Structures are given as structure tokens and as C-alpha cells.
Amino acid sequence: MPKPDEPLRGEAAFKAAKKGVAERNEEAYARGRKDRAARNTAYAARRNAQDREADRNLPHQPSH
Image (cartoon, rainbow, N blue to C red):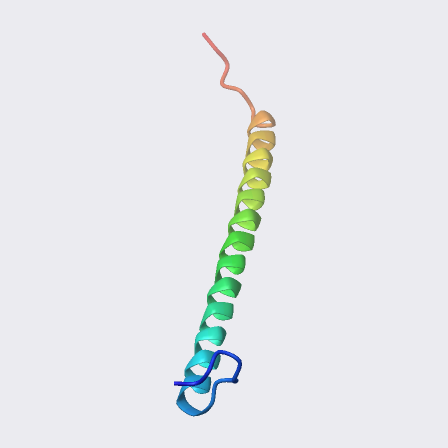
């Protein structure tokens, strides 16, 4: 077992590097999901506003 002040070597260094990459990947995926959700929400709000505006311009059925 390495002493606390010695750098990792061999298999331990490989596993530590692999774990670091996996953690960074998960953080990047989480950021991507968050950004995508924000974009989707903004798009839905714009689309709903456009639909409401289009509905205002429709002709109305005359009443009897």
C-alpha cells in the first residue's frame, strides 16, 4: 500500500484516472440535461404564445 504522500502507480493510478473521467462525464451529461430542459421549456413557452396569437386571429362562428 502506498504511503499517503506517494502518487498512485500502476493499476491504482489507472483506476483513479478512470474514475475521474467517469465523474467528469456524468457532470457533463447532467449539465447537458439541464441545458436541454431549459431550451425545451423556453421553446414550449414560445410555441404556446404563438399558438395563442394564431387562435386570436381565427374567424368566430356567428351566433344565432
